Length: 356
Image (cartoon, rainbow, N blue to C red; front, side, top):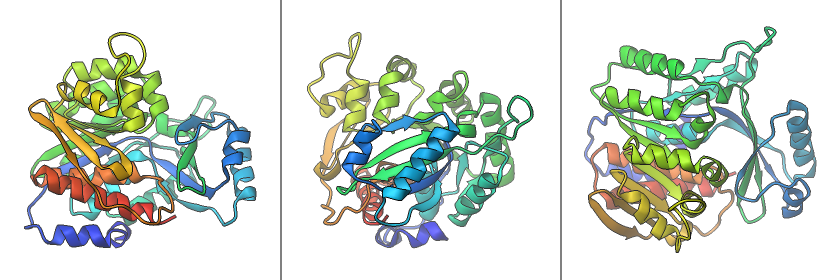
């Protein structure tokens, strides 16, 4: 599988661990067709795109124009592939032997067929749903992401949600049921949501987590975008306080976005303090800090720091957090101790950091 060929170091680590039948996992999020382009810092400034974050570009014409201008300014051809936070995480889970499915909403277009072909080649199961036709009968379009990579390897996203923001609670429930009936897994161990599900209709993330828990699964959440976290801060705290999230993954910027602003989440001293505030509300919270390693903490787990091997030549940071989550969670689903979970996550992230 394409995903397996991408992680030689990680697969070598996994081969040293006794083979166990890991519980199945479903990643729920926003499937996107990715276009990755190298650009300058000036390009981001000229188009008012906050470096390192994601900006929605809802108008199709404006999005296509931005994509064309980025390609024209790039020193090398653009790369394309199937992406989105949940997709990236599911790729790693599948590569490491988990029965992993992707659930999200695709359009009814040629792009959706290309997307399905791409993720099936990575060994993922198809739990996607098709978006309903738009008003007037026009076919719904698959979402797209433009990944703009600056010379330092940092990625900045512009995205057009399209069908990816159309997943409903009923669609998710149907997809989970279909997956269970077709695959008949020994156990549904994890249903993992990306932060973009907060942009879907109604209370998809919260109601989806309740459905997953009713099926006996743990629920995970990848915060994924500091901008969305800031906009959805109150909702995220309500979700956490309701006990819906078992495993939370975030980076430093996302942690500070969660713990800054109005109310009692004000004036934190840094990401580690943010981790301590969140940890009492879930089984496990994971804070990644790039080359500075990562911290874990939880309701019954004292804060613990893990170092990581430095990556000498960072080419592109696109998807590093998603790939880290896939490696970490693959080990967690096998019941491995936290040091090995951290090592698997770091190995997955380091391999994707060195390719474009």
